[in-house]
Image (cartoon, rainbow over the protein chains, first blue to last red):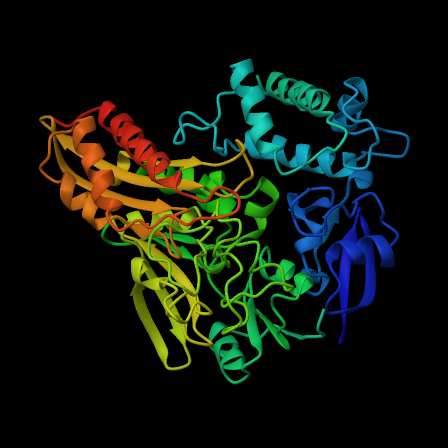
Length: 180
Length: 335
């Protein structure tokens, strides 16, 4: 059964007809040519398909396209502020060798952008010592634990976690410094 | 995947009627579980009725000091709410201990308690499963049982309920607001989920077309001193082997009041009434906590399995409960 919907992807508006069974991930990749989100497990376990919808990180493989009519989707490729420019998270991933094969990287990058926003809002995580107070961004050890916990939904088969943690920590530190 | 129609009725009442009149219709909310089941062939609805925009996405204060959580409130927003974090730390801890940040941004308050078991045999359509296909048998019994139940299981099903949020809600005396084809009703959260018995295809008492519209958490002053402790095979992004949700009020070295619910041990979030009874009025000591764990586990029946079975859950749960209560008692005590 087919249905018509509108998606805004990385700033461009698209009108398309899809089968109701089409995931947001397949709509992005196969219908709109937005191939930076990757299909890893297709079961919501690996995080390779992570995109931002309305600024919040979600898994595009477990989202039905039909249920996202009108959604504003940002992929890792659409994060850059302009052509030939990098998003700070892109730059940090490069600087810290936060990948090897690169397949999980667009999902990692989108997830990291989500993590930065969630930390900024003071959302607690499973490792936040003071759930009422929120994460302690002044303590580098606590920040590393927060990053590991918050990025746990993104698997990296190459095991580039050390670089990923360092990359996200750098951006958290920059954002934290900028706020002071 | 079986083709399905998709509908977005104008309001919740219409959505309930749309599902009620079609036996093969299902509600769709965050989709984190059902979309996977569509793909696996575990769920084969002919109609999905999207209710995401039809129930409240707000958390409202109730006159008694409790909270009414709209069914469409995302798990991440609920965990981040300052009232939840201050009044019900056990709930604010349980939520982020489940799933991943991406999934919590999708999953809803109404959908979370209705997620299905993660029993691998339930999710594998090539194996018999009484929950997925009534009467076909249970591949879990004698199979890999590490993640299975030790309380309240039956010869037909030994699955566990996977939610962390639900364990906290069971401890907090939450109430479920339901809109059904015949109108509204309220169900105590601890009565929402059922034991498998001979009908494991049912996870809850909800009938076809019943829609959760909100979950109320009553004022519970002792919940300000509460905790969720989850034990799993890896430190993050895994389902519980066992978990404990506890609220504890200690006065003058004695347990004045307590709420305990257990996760990872049964077909439903397991409210440990026997443990609570054993603790009320007892000295706030490890000995009492251990006796409470024994009371909770009196009827525990571990499963054998080719993976070594799950008898380990008895000492694991005992230790987890004792240490959780000890930590809670160690926090600021009432005088």
